[in-house]
Image (cartoon, rainbow, N blue to C red; front, top):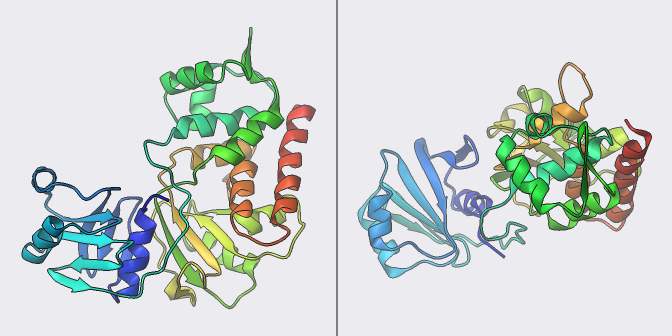
Length: 317
């Protein structure tokens, strides 16, 4: 599996180095502004030289190379997190905490966020929409919509009023099986309150935080005992202020995702159907998060969310 920025945050925290997430690439590490650059192979010295910035650059790589270690040991503006080696170079100092292995769902290469957003938008309603309408709903350019409608040519139909999906179940299956996750950075927290309450506490902590996973599913199609709270935020949340403790992935009760996927908030608004504000992600992203939260009954909960979405399409909601 590919190395991710979330792996780097985990290892930095395990090294005793405080991290505050600003967005999907920028963090504050021990009081210094830093940018995470995730690579699946270590960059060459010439690449590092060409990517110098005013802030600290942190290279997130699976394995540490000799040249990268040497540069990090000599220059405090270059840092390294080697996730598979379990080694951190920060401020010219080497750390070797016990690594926390992770199963990442992030694939290599550029993720077609517009495509995955368009799949969800087309399942929202059977009403045909123009490319301009779909672009506004997904939060991408009209050119991106046009390109991805061409990619989906066997699954969509064009009408005088616009575009619609032919088989919503197939669109759902494509999204659930192919979506690689929202990318960005995930921070993990542990709380003592019931899971649903934890999600609501995090959602109220800052404006525009969206609930997902078990908490959002419980509001739509209650089925199972919640296992883990999931929320999406545009920036990291300082939840220690309201009683949470930073945690590892395995021990966490709450995941805060600062995503790279730009379609999450526009689609949440579209699925909110005219409400003053969205408080949860769309049902299909929610289903994806429930599926990956684990538990023997996760698949049954996902089936109910999928059925909820497909039946809504057939009703013409």
